[in-house]
Image (cartoon, rainbow, N blue to C red; front, side, top):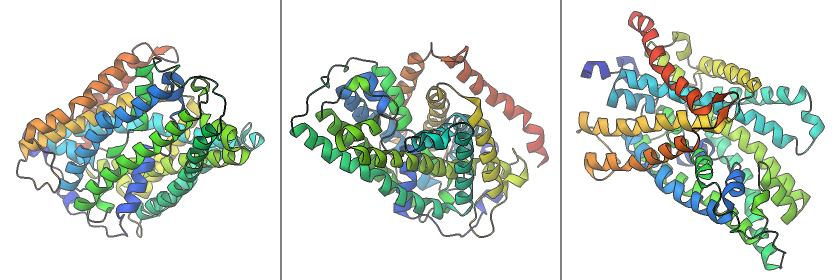
Length: 451
């Protein structure tokens, strides 16, 4: 493949919007919501692997999954701080075909992921008033949440980042209280319902799969690089801080609950609310449920910020209609892409997807592996590219750092080869989605050549 095939259109380099930009703290907050959105979602890890198993999984997974990804993002985002992020990286490192596959895998995974958060929002709201979300009211409230996030995103990246900062403080506050009270709960001699070690030999691979999902999304902030203040300096710092904050916000509450000796086998979705009720009473349970509402909003809002930049840059490169590249006059946000994505995700709410995490991890995980290959490809093709942050070890170092995520993806595929998505094999559904990428690329060639 020639260097010309890898070149991006000149208009990308000439982009020059100057709205208010994201600084370090708002970028860390937005990254936190793109990756975590609080400890919500860890309940199934505790239920399947027990407390000891869960703590091991939550400690090891960021070392072999999050840290390599954060290092990769730090190098590439500081070297190529362009709007579109990982799409630009893969295109420059591997060629236009693979750049298209990167976007397709990400957006296909986003369909399954983004369908989840309005449902979580409605579920946690139902903890306060089940009648409020009964019948048709639940879907309408989910649609209203999507509309609010779309409006918020049209206001610009800085608005989303500042909102994420405020929501992250509110979201994590109940878990600080829960952690303190859980330690006191044990010290006051609360009876142990079950040994924390009783499930340590449970479904470890299943727990790792859920942990991968909870530790996934570090590359999402790269798509807004053009809207970040001093990206060469800000991205590496944001990645290191975010990895630490996410890991700590997962490990400490789980460790505290383990000391309280609550039965690990009783944990399932919504388990943090039940833990708050047992340890702190109804008011703490309500605060944690409210945090779940904020987590669903904040995560959906931050991911919308990331995903909607992909149709914009694809439109600028001729793969999609030009109208998707239109930006808001004041905020610089791609308002047409935001509205169209919001409508598409709203439609997916009613499809009733099963095993969302399986498909999201498969498709998004493959897109992350493409980014690691692009990291190595760029080291070979552009050895003199200025890299303010550089992974040590040369080309060999970039290859080695991608091996642990590759091993985890193989383990996830093995764990889920027999899972079902409705009447179909889950791995088959994911494989069909992957196979659709090359077909769509070649179907898009006439429109791209005409642009």
